[in-house]
Length: 166
Image 1 (cartoon, rainbow, N blue to C red):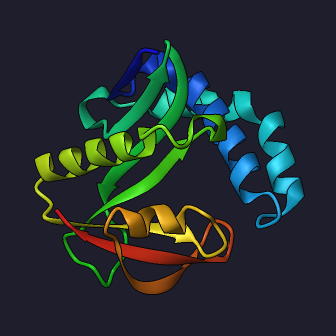
Image 2 (tube, rainbow, N blue to C red; image 1 turned 90 degrees about the horizontal axis):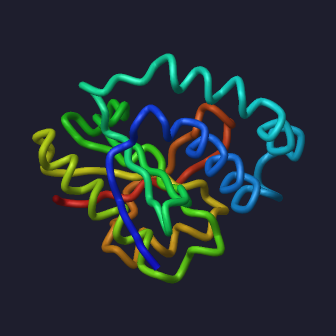
């Protein structure tokens, strides 16, 4: 099995969109409205086109996880939008298709995100995880300290926020 983590390229946009669709449907079923999840399959082409049009190679802090040349994971990092945590980095998204869980791939992506945030000049970071998401245990296992709850505005759902020193 060949495993590669690398920066996102424009040609990855369709594969990333599909991974996000699969992961949201696997992870958030029963948490997020079924209509939203089902619609993700219907609007993949539109979301892919948006991603292609806004791709900026010079400001690229997104990564893909490839297993045997197939995109099975995705991560996006950058400056945190959280007003309470000035000058903090954030992992905005970290997705891996369920059948690839348990192989250390999540940790591999996570560590790549930490390296990217350090290279961007951050010495601390946060990650938010929906309250009912099983991945909360993963972030605790990696050493994340729960610091607060906040509203994930896109879905108006509560997420736990974990803090990490880099």
